Image 1 (tube, helix red, strand yellow):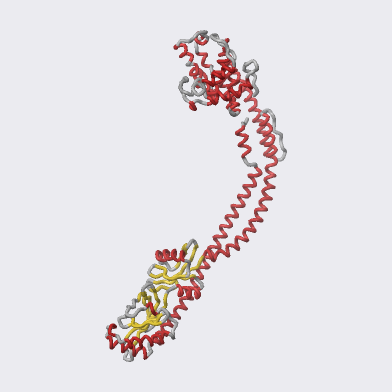
Image 2 (image 1 turned 30 degrees about the vertical axis):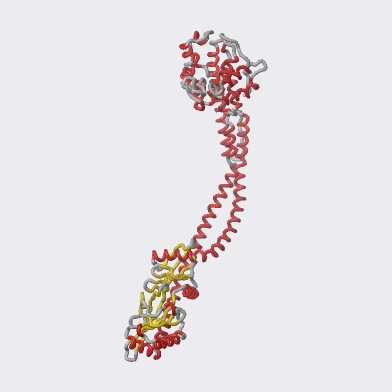
Length: 569
């Protein structure tokens, strides 16, 4: 028969109807989550493939446009390099300075600057630069001419041929990086007197121009650093680390917490131009559409699952609920001899009820026999003890009643109260081994006789230890004379080391001893007994147990001050 803890556990357990609904919903939800995940990954993979394909197309388109643009620039540079005025001014400059620019006449430089300005006005380039045979800058013109100071050498990296007499490459001027197309300036006799550079700055404006052509984000990486891009600053920094580390032609990477695919459009020396596409941004629209459709499907599926699972749950739980109700009624009535009625709803449930009825019949029979033997044995032991001394007749029964009353005051469980009741009945069973002349001596005991009395808890535990079903009562029998201050016997335990049941029996035993007559003194009133217990609280007795006894006494003591032995269960 279950106690309050089992009842509370049963009340917390979910009903079968709830569990069936929960399992169905969890299954449907898990399937929907899997579908959502598969769709999300599929859409993402499709978008990634689409972005990669777009980048490849952008690379082909940009490569064709860039090739044509460079050829046009090379053509323009070749045409400009044929300017007779510019060549004449440069030739005169070369003859007069003979490589020493410090003696150049101001009027010659002014003429060259003027001719360079005329030439620069006819082309679409950030800077037009004229250099001597040692590639030192003589003059520059255009929007970014100030980046090319006179006398500064032009250092090219990654130069490649674009035609019979021209080449392009990368030039660095301070913090600026330029893509340049260079053509030589030659006289009629075929001698070269200098080089004309058409320079395009690889800056953010250039990146935006290329982005408008390719339809993608653009990043320019030079010597492992992003020098221009249309990316957000954080994304540009992340790409700098990715591109500088991997140097791959194409890949995917995480930039500012967003997945990007990238592909190299062109590479000149240590400078590369990359096209980038955001996979996350491109997939958001498609994913929103797919998730919206799936959400509708999920809502319908959950509604159908609710109806179907409720119907199935009711079909399963109704007969089981009827059986459970019958079992609950039997449990609350504590009548294991009753029978659970058959529901007739299913063969399996009726077979379960029949088996349970047969089991309960066997349990009822065995329980009746065991309880009778159990109780009879304990009472026989207690009666045998009390029969030895007419002054202690009924002592064990009274201590048992008082102990149970204290236990109820402390809100012990029914199971703990039963252990307490029977343990208190047996608490002095060890006195069977104490000689009669010591046990019933009317006067004071000698030290040897008192030591013999003090052995009765150990003797009692030794007697009962051979009986398995009394194992739970042994601490009461062996330890009911232990004291909080450690001066008790047989082990000198202190405080909370003493089991609660033994503490309770210790107080109940003392109370009954004080209020009962002995051969050497008369019985004392209940009030005197309580005062004595309170006086020794904290040393000989536990104060909380004495308080519980004081609260419980009105329910167990009659008007004459005697303990009422017939207590309700």
